[in-house]
Image (cartoon, rainbow, N blue to C red):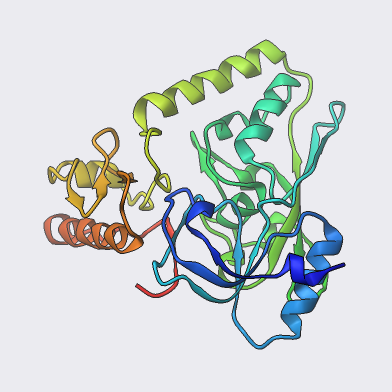
Length: 294
């Protein structure tokens, strides 16, 4: 295998995040199969540099300065298999969660209809416990195949991952999710599951802005009020810093209106946090992951 083609230098990451912002990766690889994945890790082990794991980039804000070290992306590491009789779904890390949700619905398999319209990949979904409509990935996960930087592979159960709201212990390390096995429920009417999926998709389209780049929900929802309500009650919908804007349709979304920088978005996140802290004495915790120096 030619590692010169696999391992690239100074690759822009802006096009690899849903925000469409961010600087360059010092070193970068996006393996498409197990051989390329193994070669990427072998190369990394011969270096002395930090490692950043990247999926679809849908829940990330990458600094305009870029990322030092090695960025390993699973966006092209794809493949899936449904078992219509048992309801088992095995999917590689780079598969889009929303695409699998529609495919499951068309097979009459229940359990992923909450995920239509969810940005991101299986790998990222396992790491952050993606969810919507009171359901989440932890509810259906059987096991996750995880690769460590030293090349060892482990099969982890949900109880190994310390799942809670939009988080797992995989966020605090350098282990790479390469595959997930999920248990769906067979035997349902395709029409019924498609109807539930379409209802969820319609709700997302009508309540959330999809017309401009964003990361989805910026903040975790504190109790008892959602973050969007706290921000909206301060009259911050439409507020801009640079070309970053708090969305009119949903106040927990920050949009790139065309020419925003990561710095613009970061400063708007901090501004919203400061206002909510001052007026409501509530500390908003970002759901979006910040990478690099700000």
